[in-house]
Image 1 (cartoon, one colour):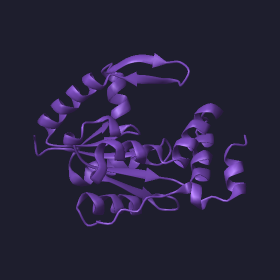
Image 2 (cartoon, one colour; image 1 turned 120 degrees about the vertical axis):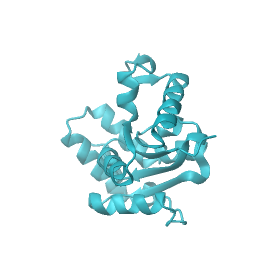
Image 3 (cartoon, one colour; image 1 turned 135 degrees about the vertical axis):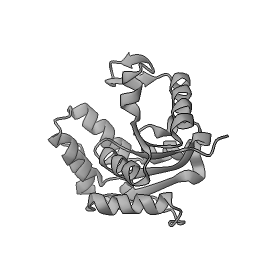
Image 4 (cartoon, helix red, strand yellow; image 1 turned 30 degrees about the vertical axis):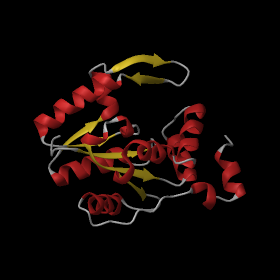
Length: 190
């Protein structure tokens, strides 16, 4: 296929994807795309799921659009919690930003999110959902960065080191093994 590919910055909402992806795109002089915004603005969805309060993406339309963008732009940085839906041939690396679930809950509460959506996203972070989905489709291209307690500059530097091939060893975060029983209990108390 083509040389030009996507760098995907993934992770649950609240992990810092947007800020990091924009900075990485700026430094690498690549176009930035927020996948959710693209799906909504170009109506690349099939329907709205009322129960989950989210749109169901039309993968065929989305992948056609991404292919055209890559062909024209020469590569992009994509910001998305569902970057795993992209065909592997378009993806250079997927970097999943991970945040301690207690910090994630705090950020989502501060943003005024509904309790149900907070629980859904904290659960997704706890079970490594973004990473597992990415690994399912993109195996050797997936990296995690623990953003807990780090500045944006530190996270951007880690991401750039991964993109530039300076990081060979992959470490995956297992919050379930790290959290205390009290921490775990507090995550779902509102």
